[in-house]
Length: 488
Image: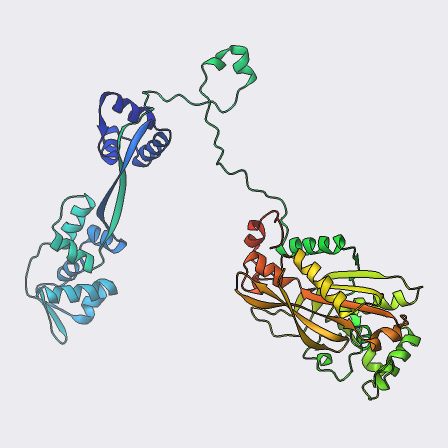
């Protein structure tokens, strides 16, 4: 009905100058007219121009005064000719009306407020405020001085009225013909397909939102790194044991029992079960010997190694605990070179901030073969990190209890324009490998890095708590790209 009114009017007239006035003349809702104009304008049947007008509307307080009168007049009418006490006057009026009415009546010099008595100074007044509010309700013209006075009392507020002026568009027709969206079997049978006008295909339209599951950015980057390891011929280590004994997590790695990392403020120890029950006893004895007295060219740590410390259960602090198990199992068979990798969760008792969590994911790779050297480690690191898009590497000497030599790995970040640390590496010490039973000429090179840091760089995330944990925005997971070409 609204569409017929607009198109029919324009067939005989040049312009609808004001959609609000047009709606009133046609007895139609202005909202319906506006919706029709927007639709017709979109299909170029009409050309619409915005019209904006500011008008004043009454606040809730203003509507109340327009209906019942202004507070000052209500107060004046409540005062009898002989006067009234303040207490009695207060009882006759609501608190807000009494308070505002007193202020305005005194300002207008309508009443005299004595210490105990209130009396009239005038006998009759016109309620100008009420009259002005009613005129504004009826959209009559009110001078600016009165508008300012009502605005100061917060009885009116501005409102922007929006409408349109409308002319015929380049595709104007007195009756809109609905465009067909599909060619149906019935169209072909009736033969009316020849006269059909088909809706243009919108190649820019977005498809229906995908409502299925979404992969977390960590899972995507994890899979990409996993594929790099597999392409380099590595075999995945089983990392399903979050709980480890101190023996595999520390002692087997030649980490002394008095090391600060083994304190409760750095490691999560378990209360139940608090200790492990099964360890390879012959291997435990060799580890004890190398800790206390050394061997294989080492002096050891020269302290009394305690079995009860090695038995303590904990949440693993690094996946190198898995590496120590795998190398021990490898040593029990005729030696064969191996390449191992793992990507899984580790736990540390650290203060949580924008770059640290108490749990995170560690990526670890190691190669076990005869005659390996530091040069082999550097070459493998260049190969591995180049596949991650990090071609500029530097190495800095470092210390680890279970590797010697050890190196921190730095890569030049083109976005940050500086060198950033990306991992740690080294060659496992003989004090760790020989007690396992590996041949003397066998060497192990290894390196590790976190999964969170490269993911944060790739996805432009500044706070690790926005990536991992209970405060993660699920919208981030839904909005991230379905796939990523390369890791640069």
